[in-house]
Image (tube, rainbow over all chains, first blue to last red; front, side):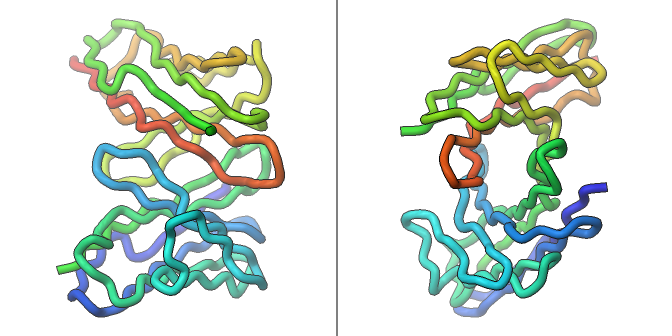
Length: 115
Length: 111
């Protein structure tokens, strides 16, 4: 139990286009989901907190108009990278918590490459 | 400022050679300390949550301990399949649910 599914696992897009990443909680409901970004050999950095039915909360320095988050249901959050540029290339990971006994469960991540 | 520091950055062990990984933290009110395992190109896999100083948790060859300033992940008689990056994260006090991660320890266990 407590599985978070993330798709796609890899995506290559052209500079200037938009990419959507999906994060689903498969066997539990998540009113809150989290989006992280990880650069090679660096720590996971929280980008934003996705709240079901309301606006996402973005961390300082994260452009909300560039990284659009939608949390339309209790099991699905999406991150759209708009007008992607090569510097947006990174590993994006979502997470949610099914309860305190399980900590925070992470998706398998999405490797975005912008060419 | 809330901060998590992990050491060493990398550790190479022989199979069966026990060791410990360190996670030092400064945080305004600790709600929880988390250990994760991350394989290359994958998301972190949950291992343990510790909530208060003196707490210990075990899972197979892994044992996590917590003090007021740091946590240790002890690996007993490791096997090659234990090779991965081990991440430590803290959840500060307050209303936020955010986790603050360290940069991890890359563990390589050689047969």
